[in-house]
Image (cartoon, rainbow, N blue to C red; front, side, top):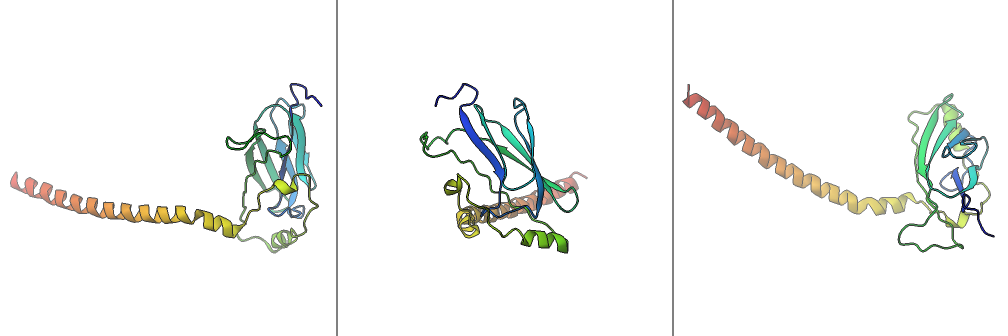
Amino acid sequence: KKADEFKTHKWHVFVRGVNNEDLSSLIKHVNFTLHPSFKQATRVVEEPPFMVSETGWGEFEVIMKIVLHEPADAFLEVRHALSLFPTENVPMSTKKPVVSENYDEFVFFDPSPSLKQRIAECKNILPAGPLEGFFTNFSEEQELLRIQPALRRVQTETELLKDRFKIAEAECTVLRADVERLEQEHR
């Protein structure tokens, strides 16, 4: 089937749990703000899957306002660059979709007992969708392993900077003493 010039790609954008958990006990609705060229640029989805599907030809930033049941009218805003084309190292394919994911983790400090209950209710898994086999399996353990080299590098750089700071501080002490001595000589 030949696509018309303005509908070259079918795409989906959505909010889901990392393991496809049902988030409806926590999320009241999601407002999706699409590119203004869409007839209905703002879409409100009130039940899972919290997803918008469309066709189009261009990439743009999608704004997702995730409105929670509680605290009343609280919301989280997430921005996502809609990608229609694979990254540089991945060949174009009609068999495999382009998947562009962001993993965002939200932390609720000192949640109320009812909010804790809502979070606990997010354990039911939703039925698999058409893209299910293409999602990244996010693992906290793998993520920690992945960032270990960067952490070690930051620690090494920090120690080097501390050493350089101590040397600079010693040089400043010597210079201050020299300035003080010179000021006393010229009095």
